[in-house]
Length: 206
Image (cartoon, rainbow, N blue to C red):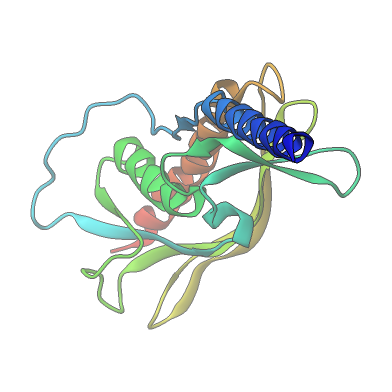
């Protein structure tokens, strides 16, 4: 009888020890860190009411750009989803708003509005397309691969679809702050091409 009670007490002690270790392990989990993409560092003024508008989007996005967890590429076909490093705003949403802010700054005679928008009519121009890839590889190189065009709902393409690739180098594939800054840099590159295309189109508009 005494031996049985001793074993039972020993088993309970082991169970309690295991629970304590589990709780201790949970308490030492790494803190989640959040990162954001950023527009160009610029001041924005108020535009006149009759300024032309240019819609940025919609762009179709890969599903992984709608995640909050940061996704990077490893060797081969492997991708890594980081549990403890996340986007403050999904890249799919930030893409439209940041490009709109950049283009708005880079052009003097147009107001760029971000998708989803409710103020464009069918005759106004929009930048549309599809993002194929927007991430960092195992060397820390960020790539934005996309197809884009400028069009209206009424007349179709004003600027025919084209495929473009933009790159920037982060210091390390494990430095998520550097990756976020490199991704912001390639968005600036793309925004400059959109602004340059608008300038050409604007000269044709009577």
